[in-house]
Length: 467
Image (cartoon, rainbow, N blue to C red; front, side, top):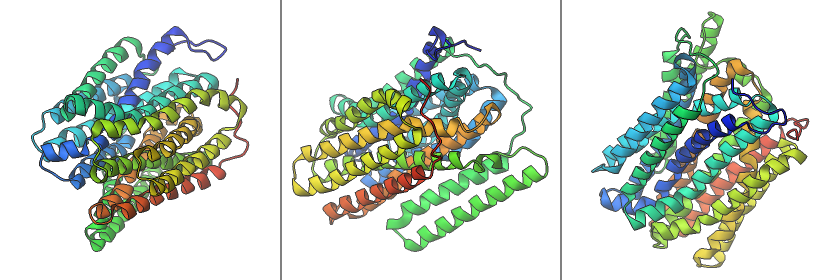
């Protein structure tokens, strides 16, 4: 195993390994948000609608959420580094297909499905390897902080970078940028990443569990997407999704009683701290991705701004994330993680309120800036503590499973952000855009209150990170 210094500082080898990990989280988060500012360009070029582009974005996030759990288990069988490499390859192929897609269907194949599968294979190894390589709490907290910060920055800068590339060249070039980044990550990980544990090809699989978990999540999010079209279909899909997920958990318990290894151990759900931490993670990503889609679509469709103009507005979110992420390590030494998460949700909800009130008061595009900055600042300060709370709740034997579950929950939050807030906005953007925008942002704020409640019940003895 790679050595690290006693002070918790990174050795040169660990510092190098952290670079591809952080870049991998950056590009996956970037992919989830950069399409938001290309809605008009893509819909016009591919002869589709805003709802069609929203569908592509949501399917990408949904595929990630549905396959993260199987992806986490796969790392044990084929090895964490190999799983990371295969995930990068699949992602890169998807990005190239997206760049040349002639229509929405091929775009969904490349961006939504292949990139989603690739992400589900490459992200769990990133978090598992970080836990295994950074063995003391101080260095692990710093490593997770950098990875989470790059993830948040990727989501926040997605609109700016995507908008710049789309306006200067073409929206297709944004996918070529992703492919180039993935190639760089693959080269760096091959040279600098080591897997401290051997692969275990004999590790049992649970195909039925994988199918049930993925199908249940797909049905639930599909039900939310159908809310605007048919209430009956929505309710049917939600009920079916709940039934399939109930069947999944019954299947898990059945395998455990039979002495067989399930897709997920029920031990993961017996840890109160981890359960609450995952709720906060889901709420954070729902707020970030929900805000990104709603504000981007509103600026382009209602206000008539192009991709680069919309992206420039989102630099406020990036600035907020950068400032609080850089200060997060210093805060973590003085404040309990519970306190940081609570403060983060309060600040983020205040940012949503600013987005609601200032935009109503004035039609100036600059009225979006204060709210977006505050949202970025609030999220940047709590992304890392939430990841730390969840990952550190379990030992090495469950890291594959908790990493997959944790990332699945976070990506489900991202998918719900686009599905819930996006569906509300799209439903009224043509006839009553102001009301649709306000209701969508209220939905985002409600997610913040749910996260705040979960953070409140985190154990108070959750100490500051060691100095």
